[in-house]
Length: 245
Image 1 (cartoon, helix red, strand yellow):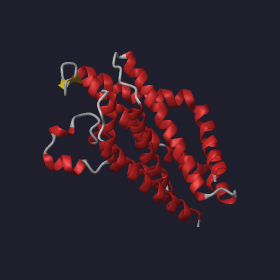
Image 2 (tube, rainbow, N blue to C red):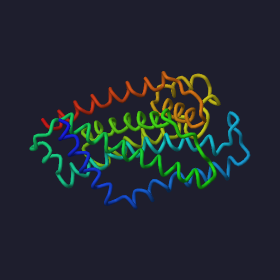
Image 3 (cartoon, rainbow, N blue to C red):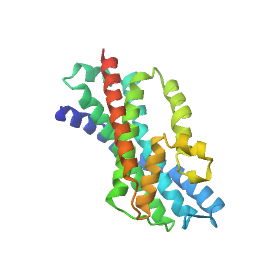
Image 4 (spheres, rainbow, N blue to C red):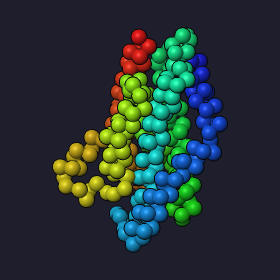
């Protein structure tokens, strides 16, 4: 199983290597726009929990970008399925279904880590330096694990790119704005806070922001992210089984 997983992962790395300059440029655009539009234009004099808004915003962008980039592996899978028919070759190859899922999830997590590095570099250019520690890395890894696993399962279910775009519009985009990335959730009504506490990105934003400020993140949020990711990767495995049948 390990060889199959590494083979899938290595294929995705080769694709990433060929597209690396374009990927880095793409990963840089949205964070730059958020930092300029919100961090400077709107939040230059705003303080949030003793930090400037730009300092508050950057960890949220890390959470948001690691989510979207991990989830974007679904596009690569769909292209392989609908245009290159690579998935049929995987079906014929002696590759375990879970090895396929694990390889694609690792590829999504790698994209998320790359996006995180891009944002941290951009933050340094704007004079924002976050506390680099293992708890921050763990938060990013678990966040990317959740959404890469979700992406693999979803990619097996959709029938076209239009279906994927609709899922992103109704699930990923709202979560990106409502998961505590751009504003503190304690400013919302209590009922809204309770609803948003069910979003995995909400917990990812909390732990990443706390770790970025050198504080102790809530251990419960790490557990929730891990369990959510485990559930999604199991669902992804079932979806691949169904797709191969």
